[in-house]
Image 1 (cartoon, rainbow, N blue to C red):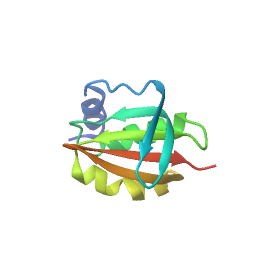
Image 2 (cartoon, rainbow, N blue to C red):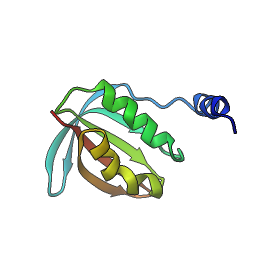
Image 3 (cartoon, rainbow, N blue to C red):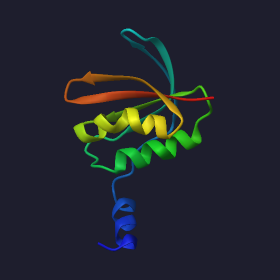
Image 4 (cartoon, rainbow, N blue to C red):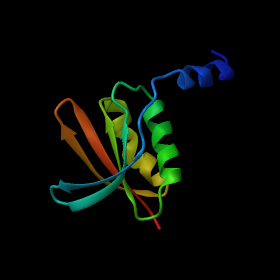
Length: 108
């Protein structure tokens, strides 16, 4: 697959809503988090969850928390390292039925 074809493949994927939100969640052992974005990566294969997360992290302010929802075990496993590479803190990963919710806070 050519590089141009690769980018077109991901451009044609279903649109993922990453609109701003204002929601609070309670995480056991962490406490209450105020979320500013939630990224729905259900059904997405690598590297799409990582690419969407990179995009959203670039749009939020330092100190803000985003939620990434994924059902891809390989993507979930790599999120702590991805958070570090994106200058974020991996706050928690929570199993929620058949998927996971990962919480990242953008560092100052």
